[in-house]
Length: 192
Ligand SMILES: Cc1cc2nc3c(=O)[nH]c(=O)nc-3n(C[C@H](O)[C@H](O)[C@H](O)COP(=O)(O)O)c2cc1C
Image 1 (cartoon, rainbow, N blue to C red):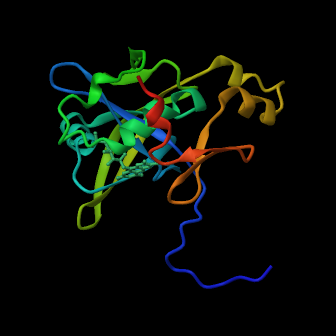
Image 2 (cartoon, protein in one colour):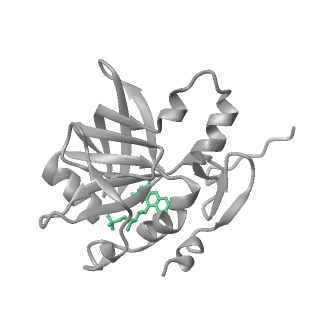
């Protein structure tokens, strides 16, 4: 393997999550995010990095909680839409809504079709650079498709059931088995 120097590299495989919160009138609100990972406080916790001021960040700061719903292939058109439509500038962004239910521990919207949903409570917010903020959150609850808990099934089979979506390059969605799921901005074109 020959390696080259590339500080601007964009080859970063990441899973996608829809962060959810309730707007003031009770409407669920979602934005699409990939700068998400796990850490450990006294138990499983997560790190969520949000760049620029946006409605998702406004709502997280206001409520101190949010949900993170793993994006799977059936959710991709909606997720792509939530990632390309600015909530602050588009009052009717939530005209497209998935089936949701209330969190079981926190007052956050959970996407019924997502195979793994976290109910998150922010424990600290750190400003990293102008407009870019890191939220460290305790996982207060996890709602998971019960089939994914079946450890008698090989992990690959559970991944086939969950169908998570990843993004590798700056503009392409893929699944975990190497299938190209389209460029950013394409899947939302199939929404009615
Ligand atoms: C594939 C994809 C991944 C994204 N990941 C992030 C992210 O990790 N952090 C971020 O601040 N914005 C991210 N965005 C942009 C937000 O989804 C976008 O700003 C969106 O408008 C947020 O929703 P809101 O305006 O309703 O808050 C991503 C967009 C796409 C298409």
